[in-house]
Image 1 (tube, rainbow, N blue to C red):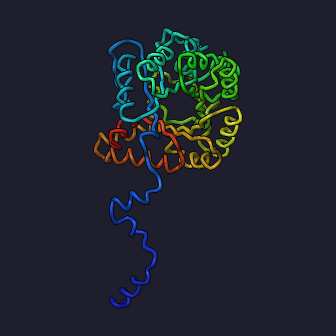
Image 2 (image 1 turned 90 degrees about the vertical axis):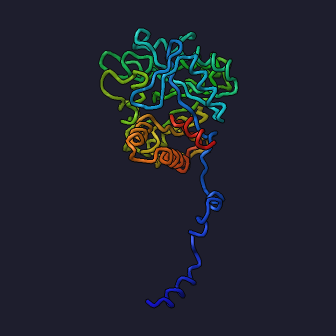
Image 3 (image 1 turned 180 degrees about the horizontal axis):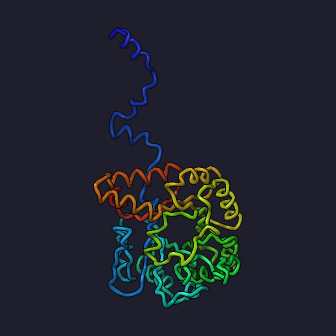
Length: 335
């Protein structure tokens, strides 16, 4: 083909998507999805003691905090523009049992932490985890019978007590992460009956039995003592089931629905977003965090760019809110 003919062909290209990629300003103008600090929820691990800040070996840069140092970390996050935190407790083995009784102790670690946070940083939104695994000597999200079966209804009765204790301490949202059937409805009914009508429910509606949770279980010493969680958490191969779980949780009174994990389930986030007008959250879980951190430490990736690309992909898939251990780092980057 002659150069003249080539030039003629170029002149007839009326659609040139690259026109809108020429400068950073143009790219910002046509950007379809925007990651904001306000989209992020910061998961934090709290422990007993004073002056304690212990790094989680499998989660570089993530720490278990005693309450005094936790308050400092939350104050810094709030100053950076983050509006919400999610609390997870490291419970001493001496306080664990099969019935998870410490989970609804009104003077337990989480209720004390919530009261202290509300007093020190009243503007922060506090989300508390509703599940038995941090409190269970079996490491499961529910009560275990002698045959090793996870008991659904008996567990729900304890989760209700846990939710009431956390609401009474000042939690803004309770977040049942256990995947017991009917727990959202039972918690909503109990909260309303006790007068906590303004306490919301962030439901872990779609929680898969995932291999990505390992570092989180290290952080809380909450790995199951036997078997796995496949009898109550979802099969990674299933998508239609996710929509069923979301529908049930909405009918039972969920205010926000969540998909967990995020990266291997972007299609599920997209499906859920297309089926509900409720806010959709996604949990960028510990294993996803650890992989990026490990590769970053090896120098195999540009860690900061990969973090932003990863969280943007979750946003693009349809998540309104993202729980991520990268929250503080990203807030500093976006600032």
